[in-house]
Image (tube, rainbow, N blue to C red; front, side, top):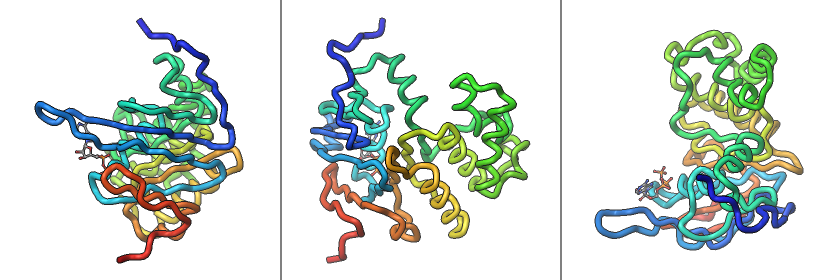
Length: 246
Ligand SMILES: Nc1ncnc2c1ncn2[C@@H]1O[C@H](COP(=O)(O)OP(=O)(O)OP(=O)(O)O)[C@@H](O)[C@H]1O
């Protein structure tokens, strides 16, 4: 049975797209646990593209997974557009994600038996839009990502970079207020990477929207509005540019 929240989930801080307080996450490691996030406090602001950077294993994927409602924190609170998401019931959280959040993870998780347009249309179909209309809307994004001519192909007929762009179209097609991306340009050449970043800015950055990107790709560092650096599960830098070396 699904546990119902004891208090209303909406506590309201609409100024911040995401308000994270004391976010801690432990993972089991043999007989004990390791602490991967150590009480993260930060606000992700609307109208900005925020990057999360840091060395491999610093906790970036763990942090953004918690921020977008797919991984429970061990401790702490996360509000997304004023909703305390880990107080929602399972069903409420699924619906909240469907209506408000688009994510692009390193595994594209495309459905192998349906074509690119249908894959990109999945969030709209899940929201109840007719399949034909949803496909047409998805195709507009595939066009913008320069793979409109691949719309009728199955995922296995596409290259890795093309599959990634289908996953990006799927994350944006329902115009979510929060877009969360893990390495969105990693599999792409410089030109395709810029195109993806342009589209992310067009769709995901607006006064009432926010975009978080985990990246190692120094070709796109200049496109960030804000950069958070994670080291061993703590934020060690918060600024408009990468920290100076040394
Ligand atoms: N499900 C899990 N079980 C156990 N340990 C985990 C799990 N998920 C992540 N970890 C550990 O948590 C730490 C942080 O992982 P995370 O994937 O968040 O790092 P990251 O900064 O995103 O790394 P990368 O840049 O390599 O993707 C790592 O030490 C990882 O091994």
